[in-house]
Length: 98
Image 1 (tube, rainbow, N blue to C red):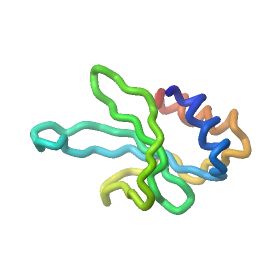
Image 2: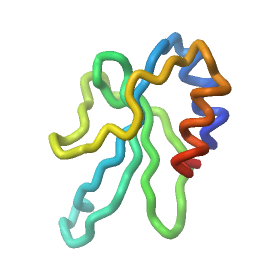
Image 3: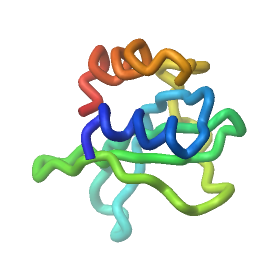
């Protein structure tokens, strides 16, 4: 899904604030480092992610309660208020997170 649909889904699911995070991690075989973008809820749990690879993937919701980013993940924008959906979508647009 694109970021517009993602923000709408987060709002529909009852989320009020989110943070956008940039993270790097190894693939399962640990030979390649990939970049991923994460959306954290107010408790710091990952609720959505997007893997940046040449083939490209859209955003997907994460349904693993308590799933947290690694310690070196960088919060790009924190405390994004979803009550202002247009501004929230603007953060994704500014960071080219689509």
